[in-house]
Length: 143
Image (cartoon, rainbow, N blue to C red; front, top):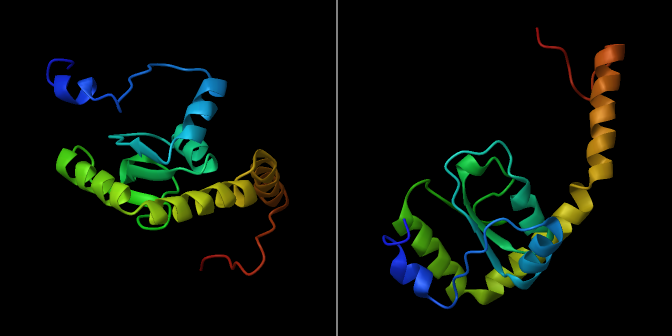
């Protein structure tokens, strides 16, 4: 793989860091404007949420299992399509104001709606409804 991507990897803007700890990851994401995650298959990659929380504009695929919506949190590209991915990165690079605005909104949406405590409470609410047979407000049982 290295020989195939030699020119790309030689670019001084590209750094291959391998595995890093959570602290270093948060630090690196905090320095980034754009986060690329060209996933072929994921369940729900935590790193995408970490990038959103750090205020990154996210370029990913629908296969990442993330909340990223095209044009809202960044850009969605087709899996295994380098040309589409490169085009998305060019678009983001060309519109730094859009990247900054979406990045700020991403930070806010994670802060306001995706906290661990909110997840825990929502999970407890589901368990409570399952145990008591109650349905969420406004929901009717299917006929």
